Amino acid sequence: MTDGTELYTVGQIARRTGLSVHTIRFWSDSGLIAPTGRSAGGYRLYDAAAVARFDLVRALRELGIGLEAVRRILARQATVAEVAEVHAQALDAEIRALKLRRAVLRTIAKRGGTTEETTMTHKLAHLSAAQRQQVIDEFVENTFSGIALDGDAEVVAEWMRELPDELPDDPAPDQVDAWIELTDLVADEDFRQRLRRIALAGASPVASRHGYELRALALRHAGRATAESIAPDSAEGRAVLDRIIKPGVPAAERDELRRWLETVADARVERYWELMAVLNGRAPAPPAVPAFTWLVAAMRAHG
Image (cartoon, rainbow, N blue to C red):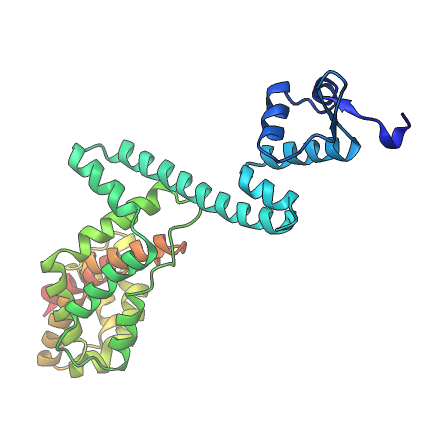
């Protein structure tokens, strides 16, 4: 025979392709690659085109593509590119699931706890994006139900909903941990009531007059006082307080301002924003509550 009509036995194909004889026969029996003919002794023979198809099937199978998809490619019902894209998407989903499983296992290993807590950790981490968003949406809606939010408060309420579409492809244990902690936090009725009080306090005249400027001044001056361990009730503490709140502010207004600060300076609310930042892959903002706590103590000490 010439090169163009040369036929190969199963054994020859096995040696050329590295496939086992069993695999070649199985693919042939499955109808993927039919023999070109038979020898005088009844053995299967394949031409060069069939050998090339064996090479293609081997490559596709090594990529994890199933036999049915391979059959469609060989029958020209689908292109290799189309099947590869679908398979790549499936692999992406599988990789995400494996990475999430790894992160959950690391979280369980770090947190320890009971078998019930382990089960809950697994369930919470595997909620879909829609299910996680529903948890947060219901929390925000129930918390602020019946409160007429002003423009700023409404924006903040919307920010409180901003979860990522899904946990990252490679979620770090702290991101799984953050979601679990956030779920516990939003289920806390006391936390919800505190947020309602903050929303209502935000509508007070004193908040409108002092809110934004006071935050900046407190972070600058009270934050430095906290870092330098300046006692709020000391003479130096009084000097810092005067840089934040002018001495001429009437006593009644100062008292109202202090009560407002006591309401809005909540470590759990700050923790909520920290957890949301972790889930969204952002660096949390510098903590503000320690500065506000120092300022409240100074206001109590100096009247």
